[in-house]
Image (cartoon, rainbow, N blue to C red; front, side, top):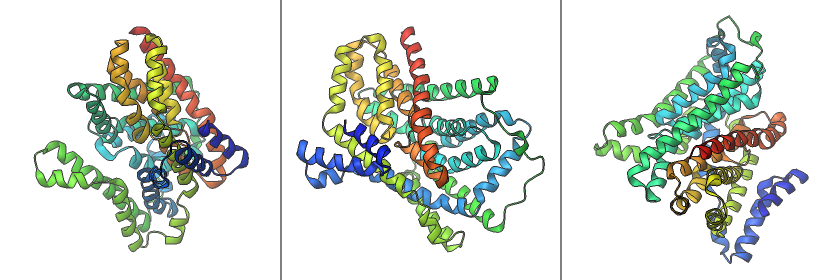
Length: 422
């Protein structure tokens, strides 16, 4: 009720929803759950906050000096002969880069702004473009050796399925690739997305300026830095130096270091870079994150697990888990909240229903990643932060009321098909 009230009040009053969520977190946490004030404050999702902050700072240089816009022009030129395949090209490119180990946030932070620019230039429906880039980043990151895949594997091991963790994670990765490919291919074949082919210039765009070239090199170097040690660790797992360096690699902290380098190279104005940090979006996502953490501490998730096991017919359990994961991901991070909260309940549900745990783990992630387009979730908030200020309200409504529900509906149908085959 508090989550729903926060959204309704924010929508009605035009006051940032995060403020209302923080207020509810305080009253429920301190006066209902008898938590200390410091414990409530600690529910602030500092990791998500710092990731969005640091990555936004770095990529603001590329946005402000026109590097991303120029890069988008070159991408339009490269795909000029097959313009209708642009969404698939975006999806595949994002999947490959994220799958190499760059992770969901770093790839989305890079590809998100480029995709929005491409949508404006080609008149491609923004939801189609956002869906392509978002689910490409998710699919690649879900790969067994990439960021999300490693987290999922660890959570599955902790749930008691150590021997099957790799296989279960591969199932999650496979499905997260198949569903978007089916949807995007269907849109391409049926011609449901319209593209202004006149924007695909047959003339090679102007070369990058000196400042833009330096910025592009910094981006490539940062991505290479993020990728190098994780890849080397997979090749040489016994090397102590590589293992040590790999444990210290963090995209948020690396982005700060490269932001310092960009400032020293005078690649952007410091005041403009800081001013363009998406502070309202960060307040919203973190405020709602606090309220979700309070809900978890209140035992809401445990209560839900017991209810699912005792009241839902086996045939519909995967569908219900998909919907639960989707509803949670509307307001919270899949990696930070949904998976850690729901994965631990799978053994009990699998035991009581005799359903394959791989299916149950997968349906949770299908639902959660279906609604991460929500502006209250980490993925949607990153996309929203890259949108122009004058268009943010429109995109906010599209993501929350059209994008997330429609993808969740498609994912639910997929889970119903899986249930029917069990």
